[in-house]
Image 1 (cartoon, one colour):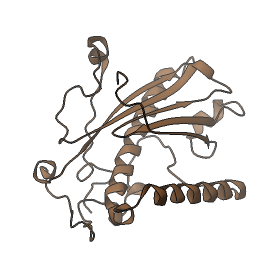
Image 2 (cartoon, rainbow, N blue to C red):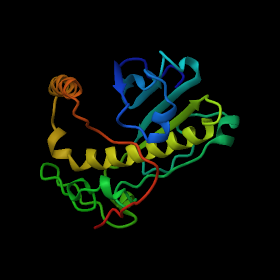
Image 3 (cartoon, rainbow, N blue to C red):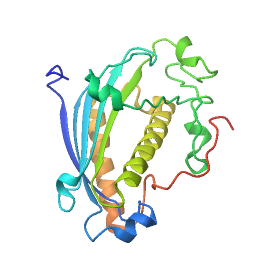
Amino acid sequence: MGGKYTTGQYTHKIYHLASRVPGFIRLVAPKGSLEIHEKAWNAYPYCRTIVTNPDYMKEGFFIKIETLHVADNGESENVHNLNSEDLGIRKIERIDIANDSVRSSDYKEEWDPSKVKSEKTGRGPLTGADWNKRVDPVMCCYKLVSVKFKWFGLQNRVEKFIQQQERRIFLNFHRQLVCWMDKWYGLSMQDIREIEDRTKRELDEARATGEVRGTKAEEEKETKGAKK
């Protein structure tokens, strides 16, 4: 972003994905290729995340996610300042956390912003097709996702699959984030760091015992409306 956001938090995470990907990927994925590294720079309101597989695919694979949080209702045209060439190939996906359909396996009523109200802030539920024009304050999270998967015979299919899964993750995560408002509203940065440390310990223990958590990537199948 032109050197505008230069101070923030850096994190480096390693994901072990063998149990989380579809069968067609496991069949062709060599041993060790499903260890994914995520490096993230959080300089809110701007964040950048880069996902790679340095031990196997090296320069042949990356996912880059650039995020900018803007105080508007999603109508800005080019917050990432893309050039004309990139604008020509850009595909816009609009995500409505209150009204978009989610997979039935992802749906829980307590994660539905159209049904949940925050006791601490009085915000919600988010109802109606025009809720984002009626709430105040409102913020839109603009994400620019770039994907490269250079693997003969699989490149187009996997790149499309990754984009689909990123949309699913963004939708579910932000639905939960809003619905869990009472859990994080008012927390200090020290509180958040302690939660992060505790979560890391729990994930390390779960991985050591073989317990699987998180979103399991699947090809697009059944979906469920935001309202039940």
